[in-house]
Image (tube, rainbow, N blue to C red; front, side, top):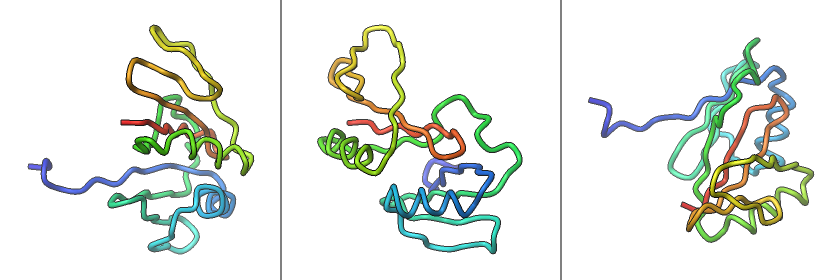
Length: 125
């Protein structure tokens, strides 16, 4: 039933203005639509990212959004670091850390948080 329908990643934030600065300025997302002062929809490739105000912002301790970058992963990490983004380092079985990138076989991944603590992943595949 849903297999051929588009899905939208959804992230809760406390401060929509701070979120706009981060998602537009730091991550470089293009705003598609705004629903007053409560929500913003961004383009992310062929996908959409809905950022909305919620009292429960930042309470998820797992990855909220994953960005597939392929060979551009390290370049994206360097660019985001130059904009002040700090990357998370996790202990995982059979993974090694090279700078801010976790290497797991032929997959590479890096994680960072938005201003509300929502976890984002950058992956090579």
